[in-house]
Image (tube, rainbow over the protein chains, first blue to last red):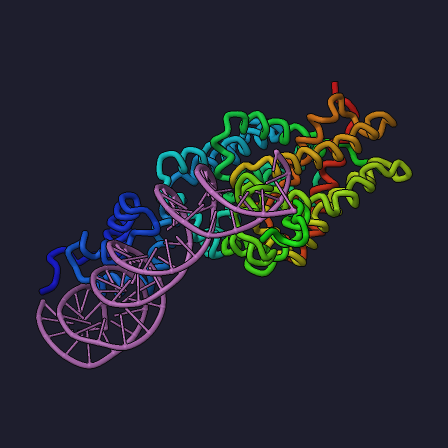
Length: 199
Length: 199
DNA sequence: CAAGTTACAAATTTTGACATCTGTCACCAA
DNA sequence: TTGGTGACAGATGTCAAAATTTGTAACTTG
């Protein structure tokens, strides 16, 4: 007996997100998802090739949800690039702190994917790197940064702020002084980016 | 019947290190250590208050083993501070890479202690920070660095190079490009440290 | 008394039988 | 043909019993 509602990918994703939130990434099964939808678990496999693929789709949706916030900051040409860079790096930290606080289970799911080198994670950092490169390119254009290759420079800045954006440090983001720490690192990096070319 | 050799702390540490190497940190028990020494496990407890204390003592010894290498680089006043800082940061990475490669079990044991916020770990980073501060102080003294507080600056530099010294990134140290990455971050940081005071 | 022993309770780990989950299949219905 | 089903094998997870380990204590010996 086929289900009344045709069951599309989005419905499955929503149910999965709910199950993930309730059970956590380790205990959430595709059988649970199917049960929540009132179908057999094989039906889910008609839409997603594997549990991994399902998790990736949910996580991608979840990450995209507030991707705009950061993009907006990165693209805000009203703010000079020097300040914008600092603001953006703080915003990245703030967004991740918020996600981990509001959705610890989905955050954990993301962590699992990142550990497995899923494209969800690499795509996400590629996105962030692109935004960062845009800020740096703006700065190079108006002369406030000395950076011949914006993308390469973005990677360097991102690496130097790994403590504030890399999942491996998520536990440390609870620390109250973390914002001040980022500020200090920002200051040093901005000094380096603004330094006049030494012949 | 008391053991022929009186069994001192150092003998226990050597045996523990051996057991740890053979069994790994999760499977190494103090019963194993006692068996290797031909005594009852209670004898070990006469010298070390707990398994934790024993592990810490072994790990501390293991860390101290080549602490001198880095200290030597940090204190080598024949090398100008700018180059010395870069060399030292690379050496920190190299030492950790070597340790993880030659002694993965003991490295894992260190990781466990670090995760448990053991003083072994905090003392170790305090030691490294001291060496780093010394280099920066030298640079401030001879005018090559602009740093009013060498210790604070050392902390910032250490944080900005977290990817190359923090345990959480150990897996990435296998990556062949890691040395080049550190080099790029070093260059940016050195630009910042050398920048002339800007107002 | 310093350094070891055996004996023991409590916590932890291992084990092994059992249940569930993942992914695939052949089949069914609109 | 798209979207669904139930049945299945093999991998993985669960859970309680059994074994081991941790840490302590009362006891022994030079």
